[in-house]
Image (cartoon, rainbow, N blue to C red; front, side, top):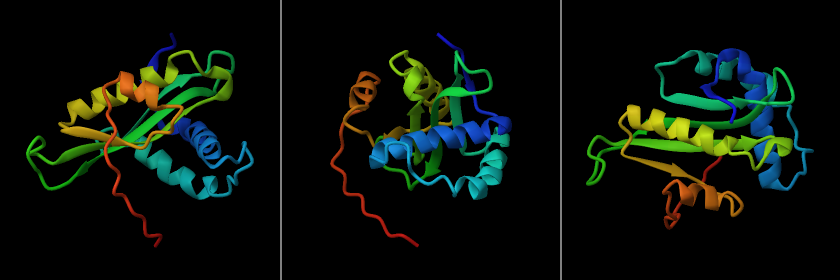
Length: 158
């Protein structure tokens, strides 16, 4: 198993590449989704990856067959929401990006990265963790203890 580590600013371009892999797989674009947004996102992501004490973290595994490339990525944030029973401090982890290079799948890399992120959430006092799961990824998340919630989510583009 490759070693999981926290992503660093110099990983930003690879983090964006893997995020695009995830976006393309969810949209059915088959790898043809536009990456024009990467140039604008890159400096912001580098800044966020440099902030080791902030509310954002990404965990990665380096690709075994391609030096300088990443094989897997898991990223998330800790947010504050008003406390409630079961989470009186109101700290909530949110996983929003899980991706593995197609040629590096089924090797446990995403699981290892997810375990790193879950440890990070625990260290920051998150009372629970939220994520959206594709049907293909649901067995991984279930094996880590995640359960399905009724999803009342709505979205407003600004």
